[in-house]
Image (cartoon, rainbow over the protein chains, first blue to last red):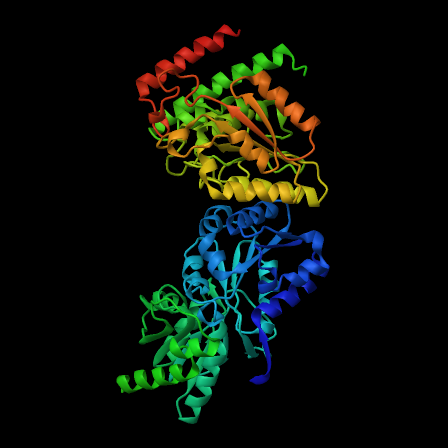
Length: 316
Length: 281
């Protein structure tokens, strides 16, 4: 794991969008007065004729994107996750997803890790809101390189996609993985005691936790569930068969997110190990630095290690 | 404007057929929005039976103009118009709102030929229509986009987000038509959420505004021609209409926003409309 090269997923998105835009002339980008924050400003600078600012009006922006997609354009709609999934929920559901339109929603600043803007801007429910919509694909990449690959896959895929990005700079953890397949999780590390199923900003925390656990002779597997919908159920059943317990970790409410999706999958499986969920415990966040908030809301590798100890002790 | 008297008569006859089908399908379903469907019949007839370039036998023809029913609850009017245009058999209309039907309670583009995009949640069809017009603009294509909004629908904030967007991005290829029937679910528009001065509102948002009697085929055809020929910017046509037009007990009666006629009464009304249709022979 290379810790010296930090990159935010939103930065990788902004860079790759320009690269893809050079070849794909059907790519159009929309912003709701957040082009700087979402990094679509780079695309806007290079391709001003294919960039449209909707102003602070997310609902209309989703509808405009829907209309554009019907005549062969591939609209990338980018705003903060709280507005993409929350403010414009009905437009995403009834216009984009219902007609199965080829719109890519790239939502940045997700989770409490977005930091100092506080709870009004911290989306801790967007995975839940998006994965419950029929036809919607939900992707949460772990780092910069994976964001770039995921973006290309999302654009190649025909249909609505919600991609969840974050604000903090993250270490690169997927450098050894060349491909990105929607709906196919990557097993970053094999384990025999516990399987950590995680996504997004929590993947590097899970890897760090696995490293510490390994030094304590606990073999923790780490699964990067970058696609929350369609979910890779086979990898979950495999984890259920091969390890004693499963732990999920996400910067999202423990209600309705990745942890819930894993539990739903195992609820009627033959082999059902205990599942412990790390996530925001049904509370709103608050202002603070990313590190402060990750600690306070118990979203760190230390919390994962502690949780593993607790469950394994309880099981013994 | 020189629309032949024959054309006007032909379209008037079509509106009678459309009204009969609206009444029939909603009374069979015992469900659906009767008042707001009957008020927009002439506008839809003018668009589908004359104004728009479209091919009912090739609904995905690339050169077609687009029509988006932003007031999706008027689906019965759209379905009757589409069927009589030839998009699907008229015999299918009585399946409206029944399970397995292609004719959903609100327009569903994944099911119904001729429906460009799913609508039903108010305000959203307008945004999507403008997105289509923006697409045609940036790809240099001449397709025109028409969209019909309800006046109650104008309560939605999204409508005004879209109105601003069109003006800012100078999207000329959109014609929005407002079915100004002065009624919404809970009562009269000016009592529930007043819209006036409506013309001034649209002008303030930068639109060219036309007003027309929404039940006069001739006036509608004339204003559509005029608004295309003299176009400098995006156009909104306020079509003054009567909710429930064509059925005396429904006309102007807000109780029929989402109510239908009982079968016997529906048959009687359909018969009366047939007499009027025959008068044109």
